[in-house]
Amino acid sequence: METRPWLKNYPELMDFDYPRLSLYHYLKRTADQYPEQTALIFNQERISYREMMAGIDGMAAVFAEMGLKKGDRVAIAIPNNPAYVYSYFGALRQGLVVVQINPLLTPKELSFIVRDTKAKVLVIADIMFYMVEEAMLGDAFQKIIIAPLSGEKIEADVLYLDELLQQARPEPPAVPIDPEEDLAVLQYTSGTTGFPKGAMLTHANLVSNAEMMLQVLQEWKKRLGDKEVLFLAPMPFFDTYGLTCCLNAGLNIPAGQILVPFIDVDMILDLINQYKPAVLPGVPELFLEMLNHPEIEKYDLGSLDVCISGDSPMPVEALELFEEKTGCSILEGYGLAEASPISHCNPLLGVRKPGSVGLPCPGADCKIVDLDTGEQELPPGEAGELIIKGPHVMKGYWNLPNKTVRAMRNGWLYTGDIARMDEDGYFYIIDRKFNMINYAGYKIFPREVEAAIQEHPGVAEAVCIGVPEKHFGEVIKAYVVLKDKVAVTPEEIIDFCRSKLVKYKVPRQVEIRSELPKSVFGKVLRHNLIMEEQRRLLLGE
Image (cartoon, rainbow, N blue to C red; front, side, top):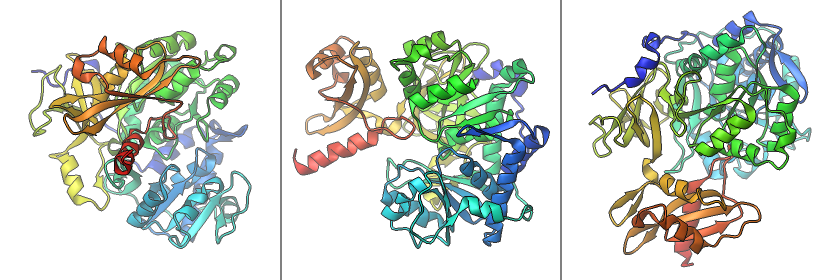
């Protein structure tokens, strides 16, 4: 059995290598080559690589003057904004560890992360300061630095980032960094199976993953020549998807980043019209919203050359329609925080297989193993757990040695995702291992049922979960959002599924909703629906 058939697609990259640099010096190398090229665009302002590096060095000096030492943790809670870029790379220059803060965290989760990491400094946007108040964390930090976005003054003992930068010394002290060993980022998972877990990502993890992404885009880069390139950056930097695609990889193309502080389709379409970006990383929900925008025809999307889609599968029909309207290529991929995050992507040139997450990126090794023991490698076509190995795989979980041992065995990261590989080495994600629904002994993958429901002409979105049932263990419940001005009953959805699925995969319950709970990325929060059902059971509703 040929277990790595994808290698025939890029045999010259079997011996993948990457720069042994810290993230700061990885960026500085590019900035020194292109000092006057646009690095960031925000609120109509263009910031050159030279100006960006001055801001980064200024924040590094601020952290040094505060007495922070190598290995200390700095929490950052800022939407996509120059202040995030300065704080992130400034902290990394001084050997500090960045703790990524998602604004959708509950006060309980935020308090847990802050106390788990013992972060000494918090850099937070003024519009997000409410998180500190709700979690009652006012005394948890030595210093709180406010990045002013709204201009409102905070009634608390805080410092202001712009004022600190004006006062900072121009040259912070140099700090030696071992890229292979020293942590750069603590990236906490969503916590859907308990409290969040902090993936420990080193400088080498993140640099190697950026290089993997650049290798995927290398032919596209050659085709561009010396043309100035812009990325539109709507995916939050506090998540590794936006962090790797745009900051760590995109800035090193080099490509200017149009910073989008929050996902708003009208704003995104306006920015495409104005700045003509070539690359747009996003999630399927974003591309679908763009396609369904009532005035999409008035926008010129012709500048888009490459769109990168991650997080969940994109319907093939929508992918083809988007490509037809824009003339760009959508590269579907796959990743997870523990892998910095990108491990798979469809190739830009060559065969792209819609519905697959593509090939393992250069430098990544992968297997499909049995679900019971995780030790037997399965042949092409068989579904099992996807496991990954490579320089981009995390060092482990922060303060969780037992969970680290369970997730990482013999150098392999066990992703918890069920997948299959075809004979050409393309991978297909079937579902999350813990999303499986157990109906009377049958194992059902929700994504299969969701795909069937979404074939209904009146359905815009659908998500399925398993709800407890005394006779069958679990039955399938579907939550459905209908297209505008369409009336469909739950019974009609169930009847439609009977024509598409075997009997045991047909939903027993369907709930029509006006919207589904979503994350800041546009991802459906399946766990929120599970919690709703649990509350209903407890209350006897």
